Image 1 (cartoon, rainbow, N blue to C red):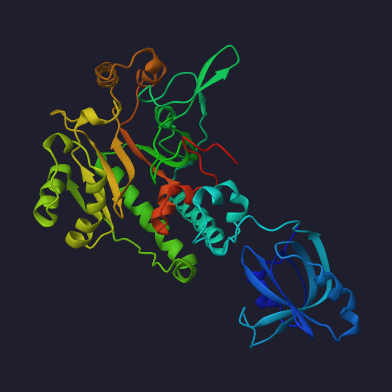
Image 2: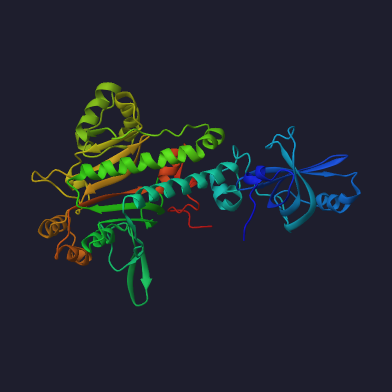
Length: 439
């Protein structure tokens, strides 16, 4: 069924239109009534003249109309330069109340400055009505759409892998156990093994956008027990630089498209500019970063902490990348192999062939060239103490598998950083964490 959105009304001046949405506000004055009607694309004013005998029935409807009810309005769209909302108004012929708001809202979603975040999450269906949140998920949808578009344009195939698995994936820890008929099963931490299986099957280039589950008791602004991951894997690479280059190009493509579609609205609502990055993104080794953080910003850590980025080091990487390269993005390479998954490739000297990508001071990606040689990946798995749980995975490499690599991006974290939102709890449609499994 075709529906007319408020955002498209300007094409229909002088014509009969029908629009539906929420009652955002009602002003009942002595001689006139105004309804502000909103949908996900904007707002429009409905004007009812009380002196007009033909509108007598409509006046009675508006007299009993609570805000946040939903209505369907048919009438004539008129130009009205003095009206702030788009310079137009609808003179209604009919108003149908399609649902009525029966009680006062638990909080004012238009002003959340004094509202506790947990309260907002308890009533997420109310919280999501705000203009900021509607825009947030439109932007999130757009950036996923454009990353997909980039991959489709480059001959990637979208796959859909199982989320109920028979063995604990990857490290074997931090998984949710579920009862699967007469045996145990687990919720997948990532589609990593199945992405690689697709490449061993000859798919060449694959990606997936799907939920992942991590049984981490993490109560931070950027962790969740269930999140949406944008996973990419592709074959016949030369080394992990090919993986970094593809990720950089994909993000630059998507951000350019998001800026063109939503840049002005993001500036208006969030007071932020969408910055389209230049490629290639700058790259530094882990040791170079700690050296420069100490020299430039007097940030010092114990040597035993320098085998990974601390949270504060990640944060300072934003300043370092801007000061040194005028870039919001920074690739970090040369992590110790023992800190990474067994399927990440190491060179002949044992150096990890992988990276992290830092954006605006937060890690958004761990990527790598994967180990595709059977003997080597079996050796790596043994070093990590992994046995029967990964036997099915190791079988993928017995019958030939091309050199390949990939990465994953957390969609919720990406959105959080793009729009300057303080917590991933607000950039997920419904947050799941150690202490929250409802609504």
